[in-house]
Length: 167
Image: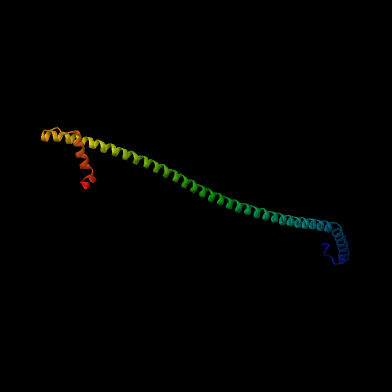
């Protein structure tokens, strides 16, 4: 193998140095600046993206805070409306209850008047029936037809407790 021949070592070393220098110059002048430029562009893009992300995060935090404040206001307003509706319902319920109580009281008063009228009519009828029964019983028991005025006076005396006290 010719590469391992010690007599050709010096020429190989010269060519090694020449190719290394050419390779170094090409790398230093062409490849490394391009790589450096790509890295710098990439670093700038990353920095810009981080700044944009930070800005967007701040905006998102502001929007979230506004949303939460809006939700809190809406919740408070709904609670207020609910309380107002409950209060209005209670007032309306009390008003209706009073109206119903007044109607019932009026109906009770009317019913009491009808009952009193019916009681009075019944008492008159009872008096008439009692007079007829007393008249018939007297006629049958003693055989004498009593006078209607006398029967009426006897019934009034029997039904009127004040008449006994005055007698």
